Length: 118
Image 1 (spheres, rainbow, N blue to C red):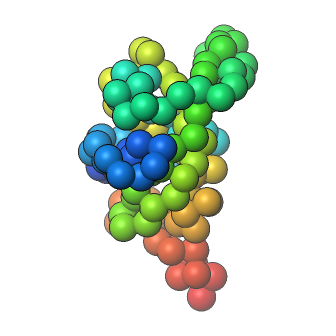
Image 2 (image 1 turned 60 degrees about the horizontal axis):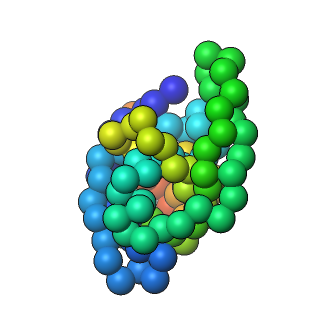
């Protein structure tokens, strides 16, 4: 259930090099998924493998790593899933929660969680 597309930046593990990437903001997805080729270019290495169940019921194994993501001026080191088949990224709820960002689906923008509580 994608809401809108936006550009984020993916950083290397030290946060010194950044690459912009068009992503789908998806509040129906728990994990952030990024193209494996871009993560590998930035030197992001997997630290684990996990099994995920896709919307069509298939189960797939994917590598997981941690790296920096910059969204709407907010930076956070977060868990990312390596995806060899995707050319764009998917920004999931776990990363948004770590950044304390909510999503306004009407105006298609990010809202600081403090703003949602008022």
